[in-house]
Image (tube, rainbow, N blue to C red; front, side, top):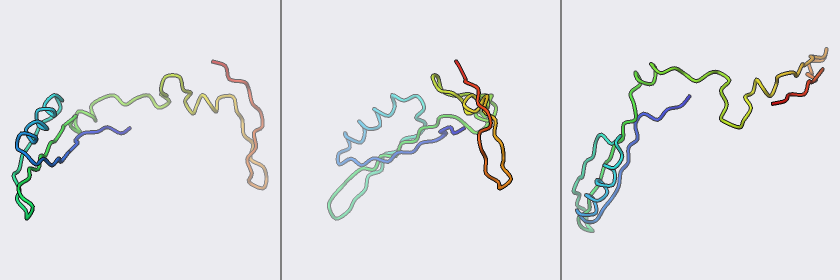
Length: 107
């Protein structure tokens, strides 16, 4: 199981108003927990770096949740156990594997 815990973004803006607009758009997401606007200079002029961080959960919260069932498949799909249900394999003397018997699986 994979779960996104933290996402970091960095944006560039050439005007302070553009940087503030980026932050305001990010504030619409309830998971945003940090933003920073940094004014920078180089030979071409002034620009603004916008750092945004989203925090979706802590490892403790993730570990305390009940993991999904082992054979849980998305809706409309069969789990691997359902695919192999009713299929029997035989191992030949030379190490090859063949399907010995199949039963039709109906849903």
